[in-house]
Length: 153
Length: 153
Image (cartoon, rainbow over all chains, first blue to last red; front, top):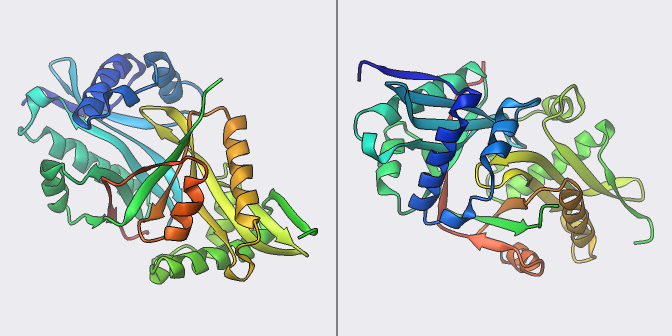
């Protein structure tokens, strides 16, 4: 993996990131939940007042993994880093690419001087849970996610 | 409840909000999880580039409930409203104050033209779950919350 680069995402990467987002949704059995468009994702991340930041793993000019995050607020801990999506293309797993991306995320969170980095994992995703346990991550299982959907005008 | 007002929070409300945040953490059996200070909460909400917005229920000059929220990002749905904390003082429950606050939140989310308002609820908080079901909220129980804690410098 000599040619592997971990770097900040650029607007040109959005199409590749969008493809990976859809692959992740499919893995999570939520294929049809992706309502966002490539254009919206590009504008939201690389327009004025970006809503998220993103790092990518690039191998020989191709984006094969990403970690997308933003600062969110906790009334217990103040500003925290939230890891919204994190995926390595299934054809490039078990090569340590996820480890590089995730450790870069830890480093980003530490540099931002927050008290916490948090995310969610599906309770049946044993591979991911095993991975996170290596980092002494804490798991909480008594919270339900709740939502109300609206029609966007 | 003729004197009840639902309004945007002001910096002067932060001390009352902080007291309610601690009451909520105690109810959630996470009393010691509140690491934030009143000063930090004030600066984060009412300084430059606020990290959150907040509405309060005021009765006879006293803040007896609040809903604290911010815009967060979903790679499936774009910008969404996230309801971080929502509480009515236990001495003022069952009077419809929560209903007023929550319906104001729905109205805020609709005006922001997002596809979703989301939040979390403890799986044993039956009263809250019953309340949210009235609004046809969707519940998802297969996600675990995961976090890594850091020492803040």
